Image 1 (spheres, rainbow, N blue to C red):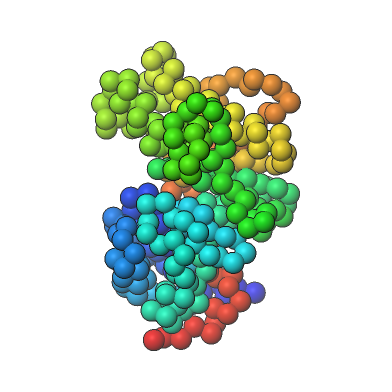
Image 2: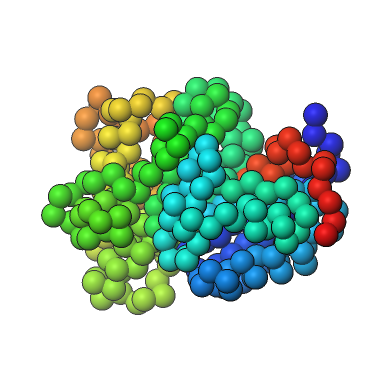
Amino acid sequence: MQNKAETAIGVDVGGTRIRVARISADCRMLDRVIEPVRQDRAGFVAQLLRLINDLRDNACAVGIGIPGRVHGHSKNILSAGYLDIGDLDLAHEVSQGTGLPVRVENDATMALIAEGRSRPDCSAGLVFMVTIGTGIGGAALLDGAPWYGGGLAGQFGHIVVSADGEACKCGRRGCVETFSSGTALGRLIAEAGLPADLRAEALLARAEAGERHAQSLLADWAAPLQRALQSLVSVADPKLILVGGGLGREMTAALAGIPDESHWFRVPVDAARLGDTAGVIGAGLAALDLPDKREARVP
């Protein structure tokens, strides 16, 4: 049983920033820091070790959420998008540098761990999460525990929704990430001639006030994701799909304005509750679940 006094370091590596926080077993952030992320291999590891050691206090373990493809069973980092850490044994590097046990997961898995602990409707059955940020991530819980399929389940941002769409970094065309991510929303805003600093919530406010141009833009952003989520429903029939990440609430609102194409594949969608803090909180909670956390040593 977890000791309520135990804390762990949670790390959430995002598209432009890295968040590091000390997390309690009851999901509180006790200390935290956010700064631009170093993208080169050596710089990233050095930054990570510095931030963890600055905040560690009495922390007993470290959890790190990484964007990209992390094998759920082996924890191997196959790719991390813009970060040059593919094939790096990050858990070993951080454990060597801190003396603490380390758990590495995909960042969306970490976010879903936090969301799952915060709401009783995630404790049983199959629950999916889609995170909307610089890209689109995904994760699954089965009866409250992360479900990886063969190891890499949850790459929901790479569901193809248009065969003639834009090229995706995965090598294919038309992945939903190229249509419905935060990056895609920025492109749509620029193409519409709107201010580059226009935020999604302001766009929603314009749409709610009846501005047709804003309504059309939001529909262009959200409709491809709706089609991707309908595909998830047709294949796996989850009890719930949470939409989270930095733009999770805005995307949930945009999805609500799009009519269902078919009642066969109605999406049981809800906004995630923890916003962009879910990843760092979940990383800390995942670290606290490590069986060897009490064997931590101070280097």
